[in-house]
Image (tube, rainbow over all chains, first blue to last red; front, side):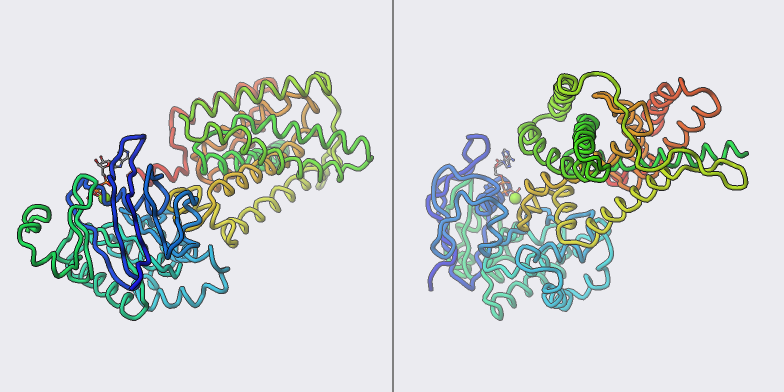
Length: 238
Length: 292
Ligand SMILES: Nc1ncnc2c1ncn2[C@@H]1O[C@H](COP(=O)(O)OP(=O)(O)OP(=O)(O)O)[C@@H](O)[C@H]1O
Ligand SMILES: [Mg+2]
């Protein structure tokens, strides 16, 4: 299997202060890779660097072999990379439907997006019922669904998800994980999944990396990480 | 009563222009959190250009067209060349830069055209038509209402019905997220400034023939009135700006009509102070709603 995403020696930070140190990562196409680690480990910074919001000081970011560094943020979605940011990034002032439209506008006009929107509503019927509501009127779970649905309308090859389970009830978290599994198995979607909820993440992930203080301290298959008691105690706290 | 009707129509006509000008301020404020203090002088530049084109061609409408085009171009250029440099600086920097632009531009206009008031003809009669012997409104008022209405409808369609409008709103509300979704936020900002300056130019073309005439400072008082209107509306609400514009137009018309016309500039400032003291967030503020 070839890696859809390959990160080599990535060093990045804010205002000259490095947060990520020499990060290596490889995510094969059609798999889910979990990124685990304590608060402040640099997980969000890693995603922000991959999507161009933080400029790397050193290293390479290869998507399907071509380097993404230096591309403006708005170009990355055109390369097939969708980033659902921490806090989900639903635009409060726009309606549910406008948020979804915006997700696909870079590749098709409104008319051509009717199909993808219908698919999104089939996946998340709750969004259809609320399609004329403004983003700020949604519940936390609905917001997460909208953020996911909007990223799917873009038909990305690689999805970066930053803590999709944050603040959601266990049942909703389980639904989201099941959906990710389905998208991978049926749609061949590749996902880089940042999670604090280690058990949920490892239940769907194929592989995982553990980060601490901006470094990757462990990288293995999800099964092997679950079985590694010492690592679990040291970094994952269970 | 007749006088009241006349003053009301007059106030609404002026108010419609303030509404358009306030809307232009809101367009920029919503996207950048900056009050474009240079908007008045940009409109004046467009009006001078229209004056020159009309003078050379003998056609008011060619001049009007030139004002529209120059509004678009000026807005885009000012954003690209000047405002982009202070985009990430504290808002005060943008205010200072805009004020600098005002002084510079007024100076240049004075050098080119001189500092005397120039008669700027209206394309329609400014003599009131009478209904049953009661003066009601002028043909020019009708032109003003029609133009502002068309302008507002066009903007409403653009922002709520088109892909570009959706991108512009998204870029204004959530620039970071919009970029992740593929929106070229920089281009949307330029487009927003261009549109705002176009609307400002139209407002300038509508109001200058009704006042003292064309002068480098012709829009200064209009700016204050429209800024007041925008503040009444909450600075980031398009509907608030329109309502605010009409309210300011009416208040100034009644003050000028029932007290005396010399007091209207004072009335504008008084209104601004009252609004800022009573409802600093404006009457239609979306940001207060969000803050809760
Ligand atoms: N905008 C910023 N400017 C400066 N430093 C930042 C910024 N964002 C994050 N940092 C710092 O970078 C480090 C990593 O933060 P990051 O948000 O990537 O961690 P995280 O693993 O996502 O944490 P969490 O699990 O709490 O979301 C922290 O020390 C943080 O203080
Ligand atoms: Mg984080």
